[in-house]
Image (cartoon, rainbow, N blue to C red; front, side, top):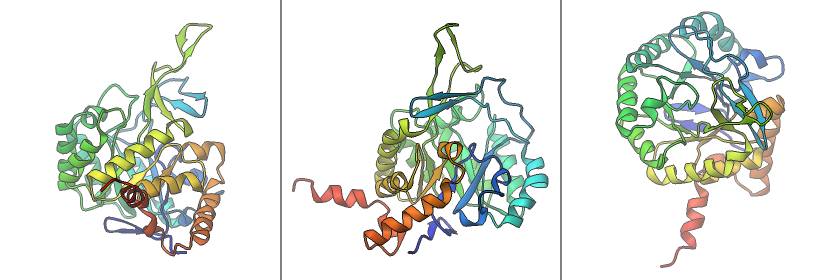
Amino acid sequence: MDLTTKIGSLTLRNPVIAASGCFGYGLEYRHVVDLASLGGVCVKGLFMAEREGHPPQRIVETPSGMLNAIGLQGVGVHRFVKEHLPGLREAGATVFVNICGTTLDEYVEVAKVLSDAEGVAAIELNISCPNIKEGGIQFGCSLDGTYGVVSAVRQATHLPLIPKLTPNVTTPASFARAAADAGADAISLVNTFLAMAIDVETRKPILSNGMGGLSGPAIRPIAVRMVYECRQAVSIPIIGMGGIMDARDAIEFILAGATAVQVGTANFADPFVWGKLLNGLADYMQRHQVDRIADLVGAAHAASSEHEPA
């Protein structure tokens, strides 16, 4: 079974990528997961400087998912390049780096640092984090802002550029078009949905930030719909995510139009999910006599058109 996947100029060994924010910097899992066996490892978001994030409580389990308001805690781009990137290179990981900024200039500077670092395969541009009060989402919820930040970072790096889009807008497809027009090599979606939980005994929000991002199986049908709509709007590759727990879920995103998928919340429930996902993809392809995973991308669109009235 041919699981190789193309994202812009990148050829991945398979379409399964560890999602940003749910896999640390990758090295935390190297003793239980062969990082080289994954299509990619997308490390947690990096600003120029170190960031503490929000105080506890930062994670709440919900029915069929979880809420988080970590606040993009991170070591900063320079420490990442010095302390984490060498180990990822040694492990043979294909490294996607999620970058953040409070200003357009910060996005550009972080991208420049990574462009000069050995071992970075691609940049995921985080313009969609719903649980910080500054930066990021101010670009991702504006069509002009999305175009502007993608265009600026595009000029600053030669690396494949993948804006991560927010679901917290009315028409994600229009933001996909803005990103593509600005020079994105691919897009990733969806980020988490803005949500909250309240302790009925104390009558206060449980998360210290008040609100956070909802992930997990609860959001999957909405995320699949958004990937489907964006596939109709743009021709660049889409990396789909949102509640993928097994190979069947991943295939649903691929049929909707995702070239690759990211898996996040499932890793908290089962750190050994990765081998199961890859085996499940190969098993599906064998049962359906599909030689190349690429042949499944967007297949649901062709199936839908067959049933449209003349």
